[in-house]
Image 1 (cartoon, rainbow, N blue to C red):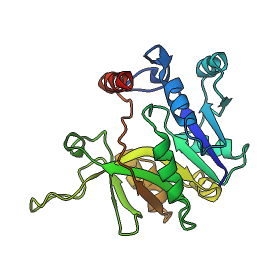
Image 2 (image 1 turned 120 degrees about the vertical axis):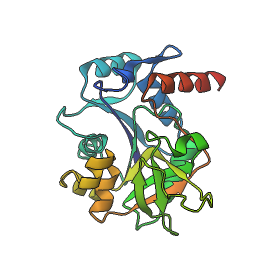
Image 3 (image 1 turned 90 degrees about the vertical axis):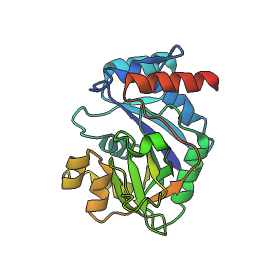
Image 4 (image 1 turned 180 degrees about the vertical axis):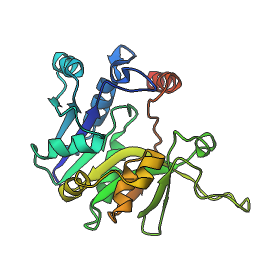
Length: 239
């Protein structure tokens, strides 16, 4: 499968202002993500998709492949869709611009999910650590026996009513789409559950578009706060 990875990157962020250009070991966050994704040998191209002239200028200066996209997009998925109208591929991978710990093994697992012809959308999950189970910033996912996602939530799902300690799975911010799924997504209105949880993947589920999830042992940390930035800086420093 010809696979293109797209990294949506906007400068406006509420919890960590200008986080795409915050530095980790002398390099902007968006650059750390770009180089992490580029380390996968399975990708035909990696593209940063931004609506910020400032981010675009940094990318040009550093030699990172980037394209300008419309400022009207409401989500990263819509930004990936715009790229899909210009660049042909069998599968489009969406790597969020705040995921600098992305690994080539994760991308390989995601593409294994998309080898299933029934998978219009794929994503990843990993065993949730104890600290993430009750953390609303760590999204949880439950799946059926065929790894089809039943629901994503910021809440601790499933609820452990009888103290049986069920396994909890944390959702990781990597997606794979076929073009038809992207085309449909951008035509759908924001869904009620999506509004409630602030999770755009719920728009797919509420409209009957299945999401299949692959399990990976490699956790990740999305950079949303100063604490996250420090944790990621420490981890990359040890690597």
